[in-house]
Length: 275
Image 1: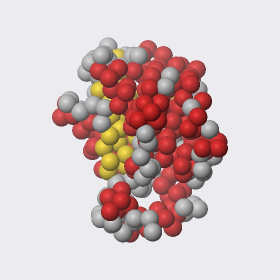
Image 2 (image 1 turned 180 degrees about the vertical axis):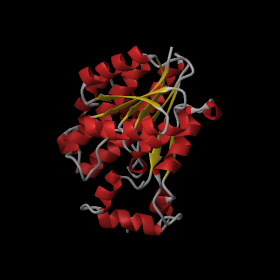
Image 3 (image 1 turned 45 degrees about the horizontal axis):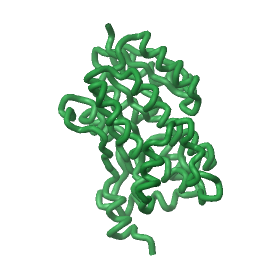
């Protein structure tokens, strides 16, 4: 039976992780836009990988369920890379919560039901989740444990409580890391692991949108004033993803890996601290 690695969100980061862990496995590339999946599949196919494509809307239970069926028909799901999402400059608070928060919870739930023993997953969250002020234990538990289909009904996520798209994004990304902690317990019962990576600014088409968008000046300032003094490449995230999904990461689960060139450190304790 084939070993299947499912990549949800066929962009640069998902591809970078997949290239490092998928030799000899079947890669199922899923994206909301079929042309994105097809373009990524062409690159991987020409590099010698076995690839199929699928279309998925992570905010739809029916669509995610169909992707699970497609994946399990190909073989045993041993890897899940969830890199789909929308940014604050791309969408309204409501859409961000539905795609980035609810969609991630849905993917974790559905693939957590079929992940193979010895398998692993990684969710791409964001440094933004680390710049949200502290939540109380009740809020943490709500984001981590509320049944998926009730998640968007939480009082803390209603329109009067959400300031803007950035706030919705920060809450979603904090929610991703909390959700992964809770799911790691459930995945562990199947002998599988799952973690989040919270990257800073990684040069991808989405990041270029942000850098030239309404918040572009702030993002450029982050790059200039962070300790590393530059943005990341997708390959650097790929290296961390490969660690978390491979044998060298066998003792790591339910964890969040912040890799942002020190932006968050500078935000709390350095030149990027709010005035």
